[in-house]
Amino acid sequence: MAKSLIGLDIGASNVKMIQLKKAKGNFQLQSFGIAPLPPQTIVENSLMNSGAVVEAIKRLMDMTEGKVKDCAISIKGHSVIIKRISLPQMSKADLEKSIEWEAEQYIPFDISDVNVDVQILSPTGGEAGQMDVLLVAGKKDMIYDYTAVVTEAGLNPVMVDVDAFANANAFEINYPISPDETLAIIDIGAATTKIIIMQGRIPSFTRDINMGGQQFTEELQKQLGLSYEEAEALKIGGEDEIDADSVIPQEVERIIQETAEVLVQEIRRSLEFYSATSQEADISRLYLAGGTSRISSLHKILESRTGMPVSVVDPFRNIEVQDKMFNMDFIRNAAPMATVAVGLGLRRFDE
Image (cartoon, rainbow, N blue to C red; front, side):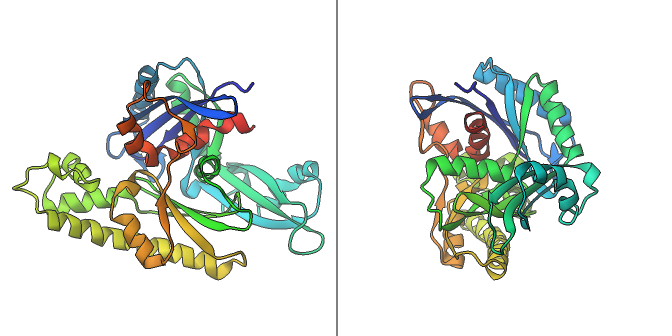
């Protein structure tokens, strides 16, 4: 039986920690917690305040009372390159020997500065004598920085994944995927929006947009003269927590709508770029993940502007969550933020 593994998602605004158990073919939630990070702790995926991240991880370890130390983490952003490429047919052993040379053609970094991994998607590609391969490269300095803070907090990072694959992993166990279907997962975090386009079960296209939930918060702060905490509460529909005399609901909705329109326009551009450059099937549906997907009007605007059905991902949909162990309101509210953590927590079971 596979030993349990902690899924640890270090995001721009908080850290999520999850532990799953597999019993009789079903997954069960053992522990789950979220610890907020101070603003500017992580900027453009660079750790500006490592101590705050270490303390957040330690708080989660105390909160979840977990004895498991092995964990999976993930990296993201422009330090990660994911490309689907076509190469001459060869064995996996030969591919692993030659991949660094092959990868140099596709990676905009010095090959000595990255860790490279590869997976054969199809032993026969679109052309005779070719095969389809998924190439992944991550900058070593980012991997070192993230594993260092995790180690300092007292955990053992045994696996470094990529956010896009963790999203796909969580999605796969919760939603049926047709091998011929193309769909998009749009993970809207605090600082970055990640677009993952799935062809069947394979993430074949990824793109990061440097915009996320922080833009909504900043606009509410700036235009309404609010504190960070007040703007955050308003962003996710917490008007009751703010002095009614200082906030006009119509103004809040206008600011959120205008910011959402800008984000949706950037998402549309990425989806249109994919459609214009891919020979695969058209994207049939969109799924939102990440904390910002909790903004109620966002998915309605996205649905209207793209003409595609939009749903919010529930990464606990096929995971047993016992109401005796967890506050179910907290689980439901936090679910969109937990997708990457769930995907990481599943890694030990699909090795």
